[in-house]
Image (tube, rainbow, N blue to C red):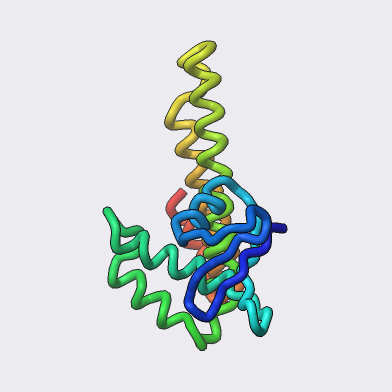
Length: 157
């Protein structure tokens, strides 16, 4: 694991390449899939999450943001709430599933383009994605203590 030291002057020092780096360099580590840990140089406290949040904050100010105001307000409401843990797990699983589906879609698209473009239809992929999202949503609602989501789903079918 790559170790990055954060100094009191807010500078980041990458111990692997023995030089100071910027938040943009840390962002590039994330994009490259390189695992790292940011620690306070004096206390050795793990600051990785706060540095990642800082990168997200900067990204939100540039271009088109991912988080709109109502979404951020709802996120804040989950903190300290009885559903915080369930929501955190739901959000993590949702992001993992989205990334997996994105990879699967890209793979299927490349196969379709290189072989038979009619082999995998967009409607089949959409149905697979919708079913996966339904299952994830149902498990979130069950974990959060809500019931009846399966019956509502069955009534629609």
